[in-house]
Image (cartoon, rainbow, N blue to C red; front, side, top):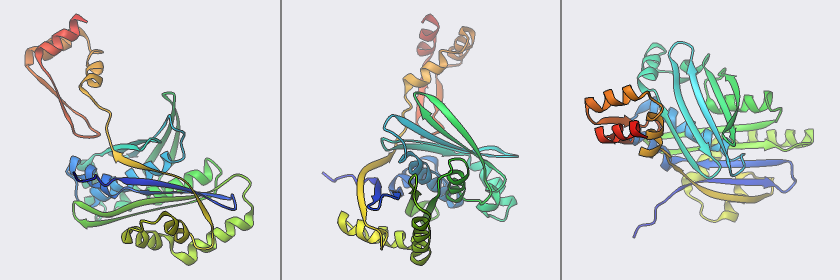
Length: 294
């Protein structure tokens, strides 16, 4: 039986104790999402980027927490929504028709479409969210997440993301990385890290490492940031996974007035399509009438 290859999140801390690092390889799950939503071109690349960045933010969470992103355009409204857990689950969707219309009006340039939009970043704990609203100024989720950490959280960090498309509808490689200063990191450590990243061209460096598929963890740790000794904290698998079910949508249907449920039953079997994963759920007239009796 073939072993399923899975994407992973890798987390390290520098031995000097000044930085923590997260790296997300999200290539396989990006292709899963693209296929589910039947995306191509800029839409496929944008959703891939968003899933990787969301998993990157989730790598900072505790085990029972969630993080979600929503991108809203001032004219078209919601364009994209994603969410991820520390346990390695991520899901998301994109309003493809809206995005394609905006791309057509902006010479196909995704960055121009996004500038002026708003990124809602929500950290969830015990089902209670803490929302932050970030104006998109750079046209890149990674760059604007970097700005969020620097301005809202007062944490110096470096956020990078790269997606390479093999075809219009298939990802070759999609990853996201974060290097974040820990509290009380001295100024000279930040300067050294910045100089290292400039000299290294980290985006090309990580792309080359993932493309060569280094399998030895010690070799990977040694080559990731030359000049810094890294201690691996953990690594864990990540997948595109949606928690929707017939029961969960049924709970939402039960909030409707009885007469609406009865009207739906008279119309015949009802179909609900999950926005996140495109799974289809069906409710027969008997299902709907049973909800009224409850």
